Amino acid sequence: MTKTAGGTEFAGEKAERLFSGQLSAEYEMLKLICPAAAAMSGRVGDFVAHMPAAPARPLNAVEIGCGTGITTLALLQAREDLVIAALDNEPGMLSQARDNLSAFIDQGRVRLIEADALAGLRALPTGSIDLVASAYAAHNFLEPYRVKVLAEIYRVLAPGGLFVNGDRYALDNTAEQTRLTQQEARHYFKTLSAINRHDLLEQWVIHLFSDESADHIMRLGPSLAAMRAIGFDPIDVRFRDGVNTLLTAAKPDA
Ligand SMILES: C[S@@+](CC[C@H](N)C(=O)[O-])C[C@H]1O[C@@H](n2cnc3c(N)ncnc32)[C@H](O)[C@@H]1O
Image 1 (cartoon, rainbow, N blue to C red):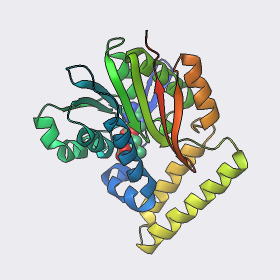
Image 2 (cartoon, protein in one colour):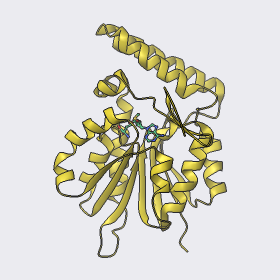
Image 3 (cartoon, rainbow, N blue to C red):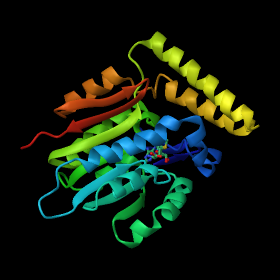
């Protein structure tokens, strides 16, 4: 295993840490620059609220990239029969999640785990999880790492279990995707310049470059194809507005 400035490299499975430093310390600024993200957390919660109850036991969930706990909170509030193991590899995000979710941690409904997604999933038994939920985490992954995470999600899900992901899925039309990215960059400049936060602007623009880079970009078509190849069925796009997408992918019943 090699520790690098940006993350941990383990047999070529690189888990990056793109949310260290200022992005993590001031993550609440996301509300300003990407209001769609907060709305998506609510959508993930709403969808889960309407899933059928597990027979006479709590629904066993894993959240990938829980960050400061915005989506975790939406999930916990969506239904009382949900218990969550919430994974993130950024200590600065997890310490905020610890504060934001303290009541639920005390009730034993959520456990925060500092681990990268692939290692955290690999530690779980096959077929042991009813729901894997995530919001705006997978698009940060390097492509080969993401495909491995998807395969692990499939493995840990019980037959009939569901992956619910609210995320940034790039358009398959590259010219249209460039136009949306330019629009997004313009919005960052407008909102963060208006409050004189050029320091934060720099960080978010750099982050946007990472999201859009060839080795990270998560386009919808190839993502659906990768999930189909792993065995997920059915896969449904429940919401799409620009890049902001809610999709669900089921592990078929045995
Ligand atoms: C954009 S934030 C989203 C946070 C949260 N899901 C939300 O809805 O607000 C992405 C989160 O994914 C985490 N993350 C990124 N790569 C990860 C990895 N390989 N393993 C675990 N967590 C990761 C980051 O640390 C960050 O907290």
